[in-house]
Length: 254
Image 1 (cartoon, rainbow, N blue to C red):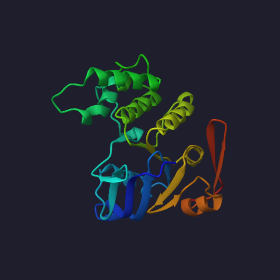
Image 2: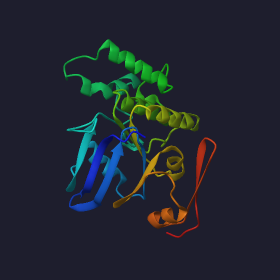
Image 3: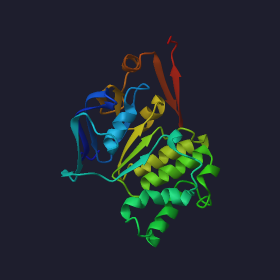
Image 4: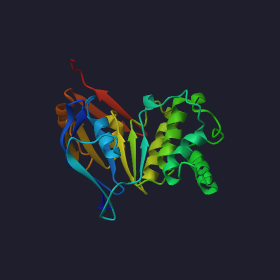
């Protein structure tokens, strides 16, 4: 793996309305890393992502960005939000959704270039959405909408792509292709993948961060069953085979 740093978090604390959700988080994301973020609900996964994206100012510590080991004010980031944060009634087409990923490349009053529109058509094809470019997002299946949003996240050739539960509502036919696409995308940029699906994460990523108020980092995916049970507070067994990972929760009481 290329060891050029992209993002460094040191002693990050963050929260909402006076309540701290994250404490003393240290994390470094490298160029072409594929980082999986796991952890229990309410443990701070989404809060961490908001800090990295600049949507939430930390209450302590600092975050730094790098390009070719030089400090930068920001990085090009692509973001695939959770499915339930999207308003499907908004009157916008697949093409327009993906084009919106290039808004930072033009002024408010200028138009998209022909080259940019051609790039969008390439992304539509790459996402398996041929023939759906003019279709309103409200007419898409859940899986098709996720593909359009992934297209928006990558169309700007970002240095980091952040995906928050990307396989939510993905149709099974596209699930294997999704992770093939992420492997291809990872050749050009770093990926941060947030998921509650431990089996999928362990099967696809290069490194793991478990977030539960604090952060435990693992430079590989060799996480033991005992560690998972300690951090998730219930017995967990992980099984993966073929192209579709499986997850089995052991018997426990909550």
